[in-house]
Every structure is written in structure tokens, then in C-alpha cells.
Image (tube, rainbow, N blue to C red):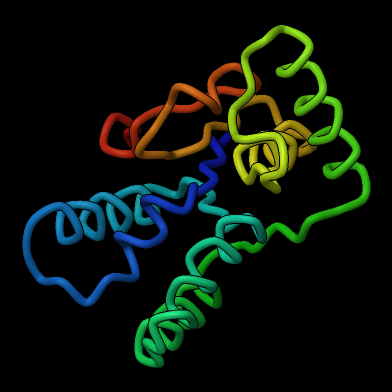
Length: 149
């Protein structure tokens, strides 16, 4: 079975960044290598939302165009009722344990992303991220550069 990689907003923002140097270029190279290897790459709707809202706030029309283009090249995972209910359970559980992943009034994209990953019916799913700490409490998550295709 092939691995499925879900992009968190950090790597998604890097992959769609216009920057030609540094971490963004490395992330684009990593992305292309992983996709070329046959790994299924997925953009979760919550990550799209997090990146898109910042691009819209900053009025970065070209960034939105790059994001839209990338989404046509990979799979897209819409938010479902099942995922949101699991996210609510993750959110409540984290608070009951005294280990929230965001402030109480926050929407908490991390638990929504983790829930989207958890609801996939696949054995080898990993979230590519820039911050493993919150996500790895719920699902497999790795720093994007540590994931091989």
C-alpha cells in the first residue's frame, strides 16, 4: 500500500510560496520528489482554509492562484461531519487532560486536521507539518522534510 501524506498549513504555505530560496525551495523540491515517488499527497480543507485566509488578508492574489493550482495537482480532502465530530472529541479530550492544543475560544485547526487524517480509511497516513507536537498526540505526524517518498 502507498503512503498518504496530508499537508499541514506550514508545508502547504511553503510549497505555494513564490520564494525561490531557503526553506520554501527545499519544501517544493521535497513535495515534487514525494509526489513523483507515487505517494498520495492530500491537501486537507482545514489547511487550505488556514493558508488561504492569510493570502486573502494580505491581498496576495498570485498566492491564491498558486494555491488553487496546487490543489488541482493533488487530492483534496473536504471537511466532513465525521471529521468534525472526531475533532470535537479530540478537543474535549485534550482539555480534560489539561493539554489543550489551542486557546479555548479558538477553532483549533490542529484537531480538525488530525481528525481529517484519522477518518481516512487507510493504514499508512502521515501529516507533514512544521510542528509535530500538537498533531502527534492524535495521529502520525512528522516534520515534512523527514518524510521520504
